[in-house]
Image (cartoon, rainbow over all chains, first blue to last red; front, top):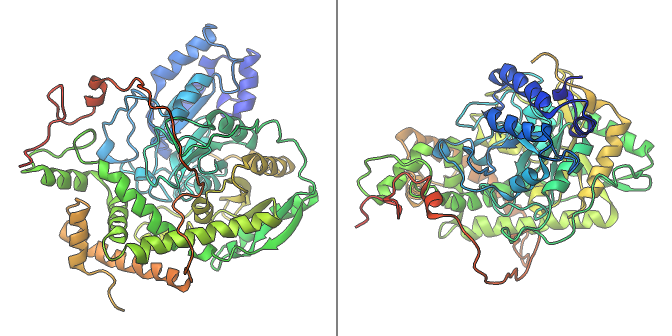
Amino acid sequence: MEPYALTMHELHDLLVRKELSVTETLNSFLTRIETLNPRLNSYLSVLAESSLAEAGRFDRGERDLRASPLAGIPLAIKDVLCMQGTVTTCGSRILENFVPPYDGTVIARLREAGAIFLGKTNMDEFAMGSSTENSAYGVTRNPWDRERVPGGSSGGSAAAVAADLCSGSLGTDTGGSIRQPASFCGVVGLKPTYGRVSRFGLVAFASSLDQIGPITKDVEDAAVLLRAIAGHDRRDSTSVDRPVPDYRASLREPIKGLRLGIPKEYFVHGMRPEIADAVQRAINVCLQLGAEVGEVSLPHTGYGVAAYYIIAPAEACSNLARYDGVKYGLRVPDARDLIGMYRTSRSQGFGAEVKRRIMLGTYVLSAGYYDAYYTKASQARTLIRKDFLDAFDSFDALMAPVTPVPAFKIGEKSDDPLQMYLNDALTLPASLAGVPGISVPCGFSGEGLPIGLQILGPHFREDLLLRIAYQFEQATAHHLARPGSI
Amino acid sequence: MQEKISRDEVRHVAGLARLELSEREEMRLTEQMNRILEYMETLNELNTEGVPPTTHAIQLRNVFRADEVQPSLERRDTLANAPETDGVSFVVPKVI
């Protein structure tokens, strides 16, 4: 098997056993990227030189491949994460030339663990979107069908994993941006509990929702990658100071006796029957594995879209106020005065969706509307969060679809923002509640598009999600399927 | 249907957000924001009396650290991404 086709843990085994050199591995990826990236637009930048230099250090024995399960492993990084000396665009014109002077915490941790950064991946501008169509650098195409979107906002990362253009990758999830593209591309994506992973060096979109997480070829890889990036960081005071378990160690524990809830509100009107069927089959697999299954109600699920699309834009408009053409980013020259400079720079630097969210956020926070929109949405968030806490009184985890439909066609929803938002209905509630969620492949639609199973768990129970996902994965073969010719 | 937000309000909000909208953007945004805000009305079905708002899903209190001097970015690195500097400060167009 070509090195690019291996999972991270398979590749690491071969590297440690010297059956393969890190340089050979890198070359296998770089050749494949050269061929396929023009067709997929998954990477915005490829770090050929620095990744080969790093590979050489391992092959010459200057760095130890045994030091960590990530040593020598080529990863793709969503272009919203700051990497020292590497252009970080966030998919936006306004940051076209932005070169961070520091590493974000997750990047520093992965560097320390010996991971090799292959490049930065495409995304919806500032992570605002569900299709990567909002990237200023062109849409990423779904490796399973190039006429379709890979999902978003971490579409470049998910497509890179699905197309074997990296061993694994990092995405970020604010309202589904890891789970939804993972589901659209047939790979594993985990959104950790809010506070599990440091956000330092993650360019902020909605600070009370943003989390960084792994997108990988299988569940074991997700466990490895999460462990490497999780944990408290003094540079992010919202990161939580509690021990990081060895997620990989508990994967093989059986799920017999676990209580799995099926939230009835997640089987929404308009859902493709084949998605509900695939999830039902996944539930049957878990039953056969000895889990107990029961229906549960999360009564406020239907308010997730409205609450999220008030709260997230409100936070975004405040976070994006920093793009003023002064300290970094685009400045349109020849403005008459400071305010004029702000206005022309921001108007030319931001794309349509980002402007729309800044406008919505500014409006809902403005005098006279704050209580009607922002306070109301924040109260709805309390109710949505309580739905989960109540459900977890009776169930260990929840199983649901990720999206109501599989990957849609490029252009199909891009003219109708509300339709695009409604497509996020099944991933937003967990984000608002701060609970972790994983998407794991569970089947295919009639036209051969991947379908994801979403497993949601209590705060800080990523170990449980990974274990259920792993037991399900190992009992099925969905994760072994790869796209045909791309 | 009663308009939730008028074109004048859209222009006003754009001013607050330091955005300059073209005629076409202004029209489209007025239409789109009306549809989106109309959808937000679904929240009014909820009785939220006495429900406290949630701003963070994981509540942390009093995250303190010692007030110690730590190394920070070099001035040169801080200025490196700026559109205009004099080598010491950021340079901006005339303010007053």
